[in-house]
Length: 148
Image (cartoon, rainbow, N blue to C red):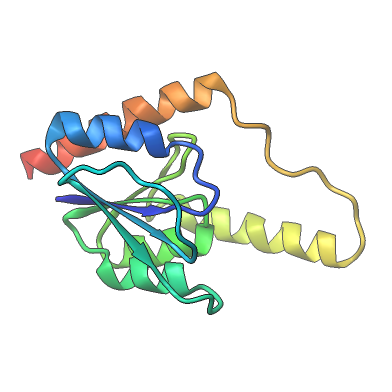
């Protein structure tokens, strides 16, 4: 078992480390730039090149049924699900094969609206309740994977 993190702009890295250490699960932080990660035997960092979607490509290639992928990127979530991974957003929302189609469709509609010049709001600001929901969802996902 391992946790793969789409680390660019991930607001819950510290929470991921805490839960992973408690469960004894390895964490791989993937980004296209260097940044600090804790010095711990369960934590590794992968720095990919600056190519478009390079971090997403690395995570999608590494994802499988033994992985939990943490990302807010809907298209990466879709790729990870197709590889058999469990996928969580930083807000604790689980992406599933049943929900990903609707999420992709909504993403496409919003992109079309933005391209047409419509001014639309972005996602709600990250809140303490999101952090709490994420901690619970990650713990539940790890317990579920351990039982398989």
